[in-house]
Length: 317
Ligand SMILES: [Zn+2]
Image (cartoon, rainbow, N blue to C red; front, side, top):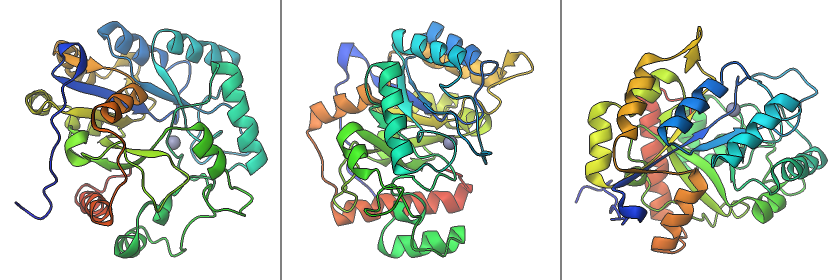
């Protein structure tokens, strides 16, 4: 066995399905112009994935912003997505750094609008209240390598997970949110890259469980990851894919969907896949295999694999 080979679990998928496919959509740059056409397309093909939102409109100029749930038309549309079976997740409470009290208010606003707290979360670029982000995504030697690669000299960001920081909200993250995203890999079969997911990391106690994703940040990387050959392999391997994407990044442009994205998703929809939101998929994996506390060895493997792939692909996630 090669040193980096991780045993790959065999999953019996529900409803006689042969594999699973989901997506976590990072809400950056989404508007009422570019997002609803993508979701109407996904819905009509039978996909029910996870869309993140910002519950609160920011008060500062964002590095990377988009529409928030403070916009009534957008909030109504997000609620409609939830009614149709899509999951609504969190992407920090807004598009810039928020204080603890702003974060707690934002979580309440999320609950007020959607009727529950978010079950899934992914950190937003540039938010210093992010949970275990920047160099804190990694440990030990991998952290030193990450800092060198990204030219981040600090030991970490102030961080939503740092007790005593004015940005601390780790206690509420643990109390409210089930799953948080960390590593993103190039292969379509996320479960093969991270067979332990969802997993708890004892070094990062404010996150209940972590999940990994597959690279699809832009429409170009998305269609590369879900190419015909890769779709077929995901099916043969009986695997699970969670795409990490930004549907606001040119999936719908100049009044139409990207033609390659359209063709590949139509092809995928004709396969015998289980097309469910991220938390539904992770709940099922956990139910099948029981909770998993990651070991030091497993963590090192995940971190090294992620760093190597970042070097190879210059991945941004
Ligand atoms: Zn973002």
